[in-house]
Image (cartoon, rainbow, N blue to C red; front, side):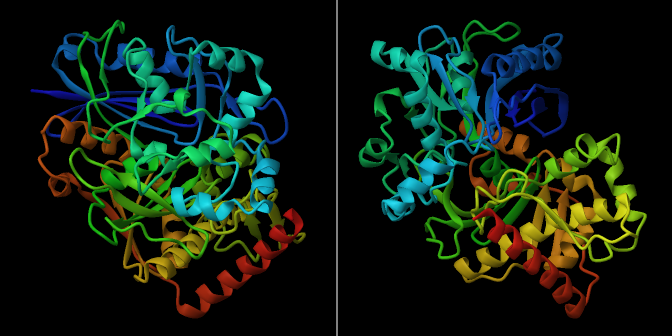
Amino acid sequence: MQYLLAFDQGTTGTKSLLMDENLAVVAEHTEEFPQYYPKPGWVEHHPDEIWKTILNGIQKVTQGDKAKQIAAIGITNQRETVCFWNRKTGESLAPAIVWQDRRTADRCKELRDLGHEKEFQSKTGLLLDPYFAGTKIQWALENQSVLQQAAKNGTLAVGTIDSYLISRLTHGVSHVTEPSNASRTLLFDIHALAWDQNLCDLLHVPISILPEVRPSNGLLGVTKGIPGLPDGIPIHGCLGDQQAALLGQACVEVGEAKCTFGTGAFLLMNTGSHAVPSTHRLLTTIAWQMAGESPTYALEGSAFIAGAAVQWLRDGLKCIQKSSEVEALAASVPSSEGVVFVPALTGLGAPYWDPHATGMLTGLTRGTTQAHVARATLEGIAFQNVAILEAMQKDSKKPLRALSVDGGASANNLLMQIQADLLGVELKRPNYLGSTSLGAIFAAGLGIGLWKKLNDVKKSWKIDRSFHPTWNDSTRKIALERWTTAIGRVTYHGT
């Protein structure tokens, strides 16, 4: 029996997952790590703490002789978070700047005002927003002398989390990434499949510090000197977390879509070999590029806050002690009684793209309780997704017939029912909610030939439960009008 090992490196924690070739879970371990907020709008990680979760995960899931049966390793990761390290020693040189970080909002505005957004969008499929890695890299190079010195010495390596982990797993031999992660940097031409010199020049980023780009299921390196793992295990699959979830949900045919409910909510629709340009402020991104094949593209819309809104109820407002308690609290009232929560706690993503927007509760009365706020929080998560999916249907010119859902918050049955009611379509939730991890497993398995072609993964995908809409058109229209009114106030305030 062969095993596949996946590292699912997320915003608040890392999951290490060991599966056999029949996709049975052999062992898994999840470990959280700290986030740091040195200034308002800044969010950082310490890469060494992330690396420690990888080492601990290896020890937990490979007890006994399991490590000897690992045929390949797959990696999936938070995408736009950027790391800086010494390419010779692996030493982290600066804090990682997290995708939620907004410190480069002014630089993005400056580039827009100079008329550069059209070039960035046409080449990268992205909009100029501090969400993406490129302006984060520029800021770090201009503000941290240790990075300037390392760049001068030729020892600086810069990359997304996948590149950092692969470098550590290979003892510095591999400085690589793959197209789904590269396509999130504002520096990668998704049509030419290469770093773009002009875009790099605009952001003052030397191409020499960036990783080599290889296919998503290609050989990215082999393990070397890692406690608990034999040397020579191939790292044979890597995808950014949301593209991994698209693959993990077996959305391998044109028009299939998924939503991952994690820290944020991330929606992708497979558009096949055609990179659909968005006229509704969505993103055109690479879903994956398998060895020897043309890339598969996707339309994407991201809401920065989803599960993090529930964490805010828990940690900020102290409405609940555990995140899992929000469903019962929200279900204790039949409706939010007109309360609307816009969860713009780190700005607004697609299709609004307002980095300065702040969250808002409206419709409060003397009768408003914690339960109404909790229900409005779940509705706010779902409202954001409706706006994204409406834009996606207009761009793709395809109606949404169903939506595959995954991620930790998709276990919340009330949230899933609210989402189905607001969308007016069926939601399909799989047996295994860790679709990002499963996508990394699929990518690694495709890399070593365990699955011969993409359609083979469909046979492994199994549904757990469907959620069907119960609202009529009038109820849905009234609810969406409340959201439109609220979001208009937030966006106006933000700008």
